[in-house]
Length: 367
Image 1 (cartoon, one colour):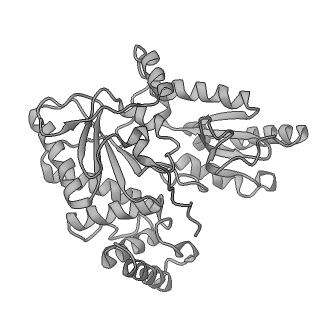
Image 2: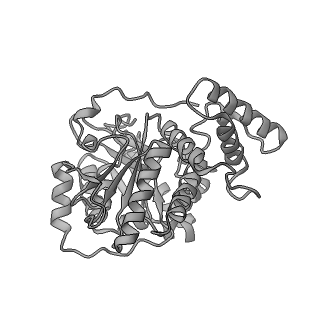
Image 3: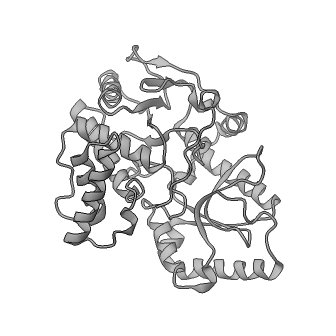
């Protein structure tokens, strides 16, 4: 299993490095949606950054359990990325389970992982999310520490940040949410950023100004008077960065599109969730699906693209990509899931047109 090279850049000077690590920080005036846009693609030297929108704000045990269950789901969706060699295990039977548990034991023996937890998670990852008995049997503290390590490893990063969107909550709910964040820091080794609103009742959390790059701050300011296009559905609780090279495991639409494209020879050369870097000093873009030789980008838009900041950023980004000579096709999740043949046919026709016109001049500038 090939991992990207671990970044060695100077992270201390990066804009996202303002909050201290291993702490709970409040980011005043920063919308969670702005952070999601500005941190996509995930910067090379950044920690693994997850985005969480609470649906439970009390009591403390329920908040912690809900967060851990969501992180557990994410870690299982990232399997086998965090366990070297597990991508070659293709059996869910007795031999496959024994193989991944042995891999987990060897990994834990030479790392900071707790062997029994890693083996259990690997077995559940191999069996799939719908297998009976799929919930973790470990204590919350063990789960928190183990999940933080696994998620960081999935992105080949040293640590994990959880961005929590602050709800409009009363005093008790706010204090409970802050206590849960502090619990995750203490027991899991997470760094937690609280964003999206003021903290009115939990005065022990330090507020840390975050200098978001000007292009994103300007985008937020120019759209602040516009309403969101649609509310994000209640089921969207935790979001995490895509893993380069594969369709998102948490996107039924990306998975469906890959299944629809896989049988066709003309669809070869596609790359999922790659970063497009056309100049060393320019903005990098993550493309959902990309044919680099032909210069065709396909975007599969879920509900997170309907927010006012994300929508405006998508339009600005499409213009820039088109100025660079790429064609950009956008489909909604609903289009892919309800009429995949039409989506595939549209891609096929545009690919044929691009191939007839020759090779795209920046065709190999992805990472």
